[in-house]
Amino acid sequence: MAYPAYWNPKNETMPREELHALQLYKLRRMCEWAQAKSPFHQQRFQAAGFSPDQLKTLDDLRRIPYMTREAWMDSQAEQPLFGALPTTGQEHAIRYHLTSGTSGRVPIRVLDSMKDWEWIAEMWCYGFWGFGVRPEDVVYFAFGYGSFIGFWGAHYCCEKLGALVIPGGAQTTEARVKQIVEMGVTTVCSTPTYALRLWQQAAEMGINLAASTVNKVILSGEPSGSIPAVKRQLEEAWGAKVGDTAGMTELGTIMIFECSHQPGGTHIIEDHFIEEVIHPETSEPVPYGELGERVVTSFGRGFIPVLRYRTKDMVLKVPHTRCDCGRTGDLYDGGIRGRWDDMKLIRGTNVYPRAVEAIVRDFDAIDEFQIYLWRADDIRDEITIRLELKPGREADWPELREKLAKALADAHEGLRFNIELMEPGTLPRFELKAKRLVDARPAARY
Image 1 (tube, rainbow, N blue to C red):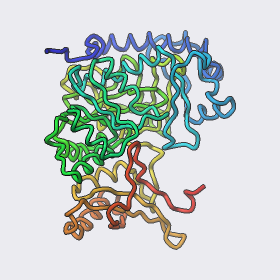
Image 2 (cartoon, rainbow, N blue to C red):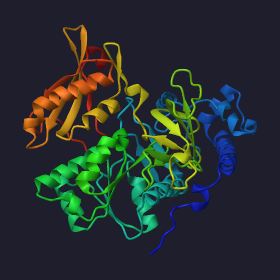
Image 3 (spheres, helix red, strand yellow):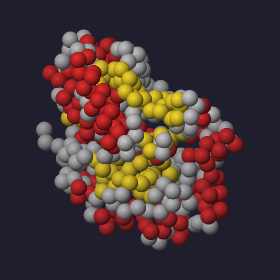
Image 4 (cartoon, rainbow, N blue to C red):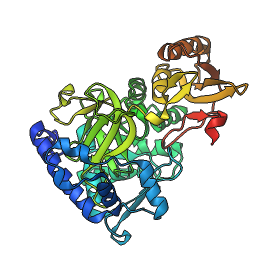
């Protein structure tokens, strides 16, 4: 059966001028709603001297004060459990979720109405359809169904577009591999880390996933989903096309996705979000092609409006013309490249975990790794890459150690990285967001 190329053809291919007019209309409407219904935003607007009627052009977006995670958490602490953000009472909510806790001491808690939840699934439909998921697909979610929002919206998206959904749930990795094979799964959804783990488990079971019915692997939850070396490993392991998506609990859904053309970046769903890129220190906007911090405004979730939220995500925006799929939403080259607050200073050199992973994953003999920061003699900061090799690759160790150390040093102003070989099974494995950086320096404990 022939299907349209886009989930929402009109909006996804809308001329930029019309798209900006639509964004302005939705921005005004959301700001009016937030001012009327959300005490949190009422206070912010008043303090900044902002009123929705000041929004004459999209440039007026900058009149809206920034929203931060810290202010959100402070509001929750002052007014448990959800703070002053909600526009209506808890009795009108049908969903509850919270952040995974990978950053910050307190999780952000969110509520959604029925209308919000339908919109959340719709945003995932943009991404899944864009990557090629169709009604005849069998979609497997290698995901533990807890309070973390993760792939929840994607599950409902697949039901909406008519695909068969198989929830992985609380199973062992071995059981999930068996289920993927016996059910003739065509699309697997997981974090990049867990997609590698599923492949490793399958190999131990004597199962060649590259010969299975899986032809699409959709990633989310970690910046490594857009690292070329990681995608290359996964595409070879699964014999499938691999695509990246990214979302946030704060938004309830994805805001970017990789289309089937795989342009080396992720499309922004610009008819539902405004994505700004600013300098993380000066807060000034940066142009196309320059690394900066994501600031997001969402038009879809009415229960908890998100307006100019500083994400601390590291991105590089490029024009929509980078991709030949016909969509007019701009892209983030390399997807989400990490977080500005993940940067670690080691002996005067900035080290970003995603940049380290991009180098480590170029060595296909490496099975798993960990970035370990420590302090020698209470004076000198050190960085060690702990790694495990794939079975049968032990002979690669001497040469790999030398080449990896050099590649890391070359990319980090000559900074010396210690390389340590660990026994198989020593390093942790992850199903959800991987936490491969361990900062054991005394100052990091407080």
